[in-house]
Image 1: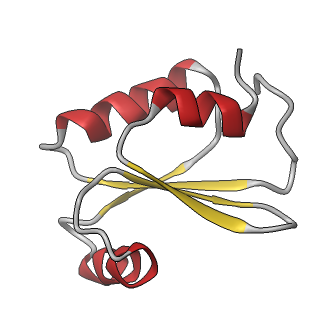
Image 2: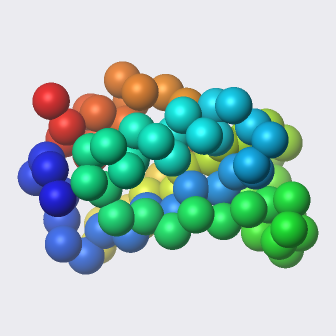
Length: 89
């Protein structure tokens, strides 16, 4: 795993196969050897409701980052924010 990630960190990518930016986010995480769980909100309506409830956003992708200290969401494929949060150079 690249970067200096907390080993207890969990990453969930909420997206859909038809979403271009979801595919880009998935490719970015895979390219940088970041372990994550992919959740297809088109197939998993409960996950879609969860994301809407937590973020008040209907757009995807949504990346949830959970570690010992906090839970946060990155809305959309924001490579700069992901690099900063995941400590990827």
